[in-house]
Image (cartoon, rainbow, N blue to C red):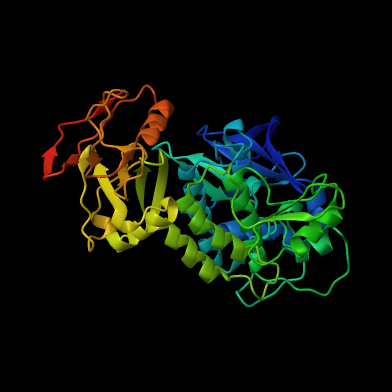
Length: 456
C-alpha cells in the first residue's frame, strides 16, 4: 500500500504504466471517493525541473468536460514522490474499448460520433489555451459513463504538452511511435539527424491516426511484420504517402504498399458518415505540414458533421439501409440528391413511406421539418422507375404467388426477386405496406386504394 496525506492506494491496482510514471486507482481517505493518482518514478526526476512541473501547471489551467479533471498534487509519505491526483474514469480508455472483440472492426457509428465530438471539443479547448498535446492516441483518451449511460471521452496525460501558438514551432520530440508524424518519427525512432522544426499540426496527424483506428479497429499504416519490428518500412509508408491516401499496408517483406483512399468495407460506419469523414482524414494525414489543414479548418469540418441531421432510409428494392447526413436548412432537393448518390435511384423515381403511410416531401421542405427517423423507424424508399420484366404489384394474385399479382404499384415498382430476397433476409418479420395501386387495362385506367399487404 502507498499513501499521501489525503489518498490511499494499492500498488497492485495499477491502471497503466508509462516511461516516467504509473497510474493507480486510489481512494480519498475521508470521503472514499475513487480517484486516479499518477505516481512519478525516478526517471521523471532526471528531467529539468521546468519539465517536471509543466504537467501540473498545464492541468491547473485547463478546465473542460472533455479533459480529465485535476484535483491536487501531493507527495507520498516515505519516498516523497510527487503524486498527481486526477478524476477517475471507470470506463477505461478508448484503447481498451477498441480491444473489445465487439469492436474488432471499429466502433459502432453512434459511439464513433461521441468520440469525434468529445475529442474535437477537448482539442478545441487546448487550442483556445495555446496548448499542443503531442501524444494523442487511444490510450490517452479516457472513457467515463455519464448518468444517462452515454460515454464521455476525456483527454489525459499532459506530460508531453506545452504552450505553443498556431505559428510557433518546437524542436523536442515526444509521442508514441504508431501515432507520430513522420517528421518526428524519423528523429525519435530512427534517430536520424535533422534540422526540422514542428508545429501544432503534428497533433492533427495523431488525431487522424486515432480516428482511423477508432473507425476501423486497425492502424492505418502497417509495414510487413508490424511497425515495432519494421521501423524503416513504417517511415517509408508514412513519409511517402500520396495525397488523399488514408491508409497503406505492406503485404510482404520489401514489397509494394497497397494504398487506400476509402475506409474498408468492414468498417461499421454508414456510407453517409464515411463520405463526410474520409476528406477530413485525407487532409490531416498530410505529410507536408505546409499542405496539412490547420486547426481552424479541422474544427470547422468536424463540427459540420456533428451539426448535421441524420435521416435514416430503408431502400426496399435493394433491401439496404442508408443514413443521409444533411444540414437542417437543406431542402428536399438536396436530400433526394444525397439518396441518389447512395442508391442510384434518380430523385424523380423516389417514393417514400413512413410508418406504413405514403410520405410526401415538398421540394422546398427543410430537413429540420422532416419526420424524425431512427434506424428502427426509417423512411422506406421505393422506386417508380420503368417496370422491369419481373416486376409485379402487390395484393393481386397469380397462380405461383398468391399474394403477388401482375399489377403495377403506383408507389413503386416492386420486383418479385427483391421481395423474396427481403423476406429471405427477415423471415420472421411482418411487413405491412399501405400503398396506392394503378390498375391498367385496355380501355381505362383506374386507381384504387389497397387496404394493406402482409407477408410473413
